[in-house]
Amino acid sequence: MGDGPLIRWDWIARNWDTKVLASLIEHLQLSLIPLAIGLVVALLLGIASARWPRLYPPVLTSVNVVYAVPSLALFFLLLPYTGFSLWTAIIPLALYSLAILVPNVVDGLNQVPDHVRRAATAMGYGPLRRLLTVELPVAVPVLIAGLRVAAVATISMVSVAALVGLGGLGQLILTDGFRRQFPTPIIVGITLTVVLAFVVDALLVLLQRWLTPWARDTPTPGVRTREEDAA
Amino acid sequence: MNFVQISIDWFSQPEHWTGPSGVPVRLAEHAGYSGLALFLAALIAVPVGLVTGHTGRGGFTAASAANFARALPTMGVLFLVVLLAGIGLVPVMVALVALAVPPILVNTYEGVRGVEPRLRDAAVGMGMRGWEVLFRLELPVALPLVLLGVRTAAIQVVSTATIAAYVGIGGLGRFIVDGQARREFDMVIAGSILVVALAMVVIAASAIARRTLVAPGLRVRQPSGT
Image (cartoon, helix red, strand yellow):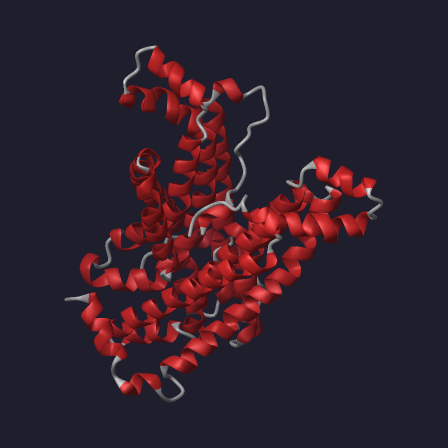
């Protein structure tokens, strides 16, 4: 354990631009890209599972099994194929987000009231147009609830990728902090990870308000962390 | 290369099954850390969730704290506590308990909150006192959700306990970390398979717990899924 105070502000000031900010930006990249990929894949899998319900149990089981694989192992196993590129971190993180996002897409689509669906059909909407302009917008609150859980989970998990030489703020925690027995970078890394998670979470809440103008006056249902679906 | 063949080869070698770094010992270590962390987390999260859910007070604070804990990078917490308290069981437990508390706490709270007011009125009408309402009505009704929270937490703990190997403690993470260090990828794969298998045991155990603990009248309302 290092000498001196727990937080050395001068270290933070000296390394702000070169280390701290750079790690923060990498961390943001490593969390947002997997979330975006995860969302697209989850939408495809979820739409298919909502449409053909027999598909849902095998899809759900597969994403849950992947979720149980330790992130450390997935990073290591990808290393020979993707090397030290960002993909080594992005692919596992995107896979993990599926376990949270797929059930939310399916639940979101299944809870679209039948009369809404029938009204759209009666107005002459084809299946694709109905899905894009009616069903998905109605499912937005449930979708965003899942996205919020997935975002916080991903942002906090990115750090593990430091063990394969990536990992944004995880690098700060591992290389600058743990390996040098120096607590300051660890505390900075933890704090910024939590701040980042809260900022992204708040932005998702704003996004939901913007996407669902009709729900603004009423308390939003469906904004519930769906722990029960995460596993 | 074929993952199935590689892992069958690895598992069929007898030397991987004996000694202090054999599969049974590592498996027992891993299950031990995970079980202890889960027990400690439940000891904190279930009472807090029950009380905040029952009284309706402090719920926002508890949910915010749980959200905060969810955002904590497990590895950062682990390394920080290692630097402050030294290598040992303590840092691993702190990191894993911080990981396991949020899902259990949030689900317990939501479960108790979600009890229908009619049922609560009926219980009070039958002359139940506050704690009787909590233990004879709210807890049993909330139990399916509580168990799901425990299951989520257990899967995350089992999967994350692998990083304990990184601070010199055993468990299945040793296969993954050592395999990586020695470039023996069959070992990494075998370690991952064992972790996933342990997670499957957790899922099976939670299904059994649900069947034996949840009141028969509530079972039909179970969310489907694995």
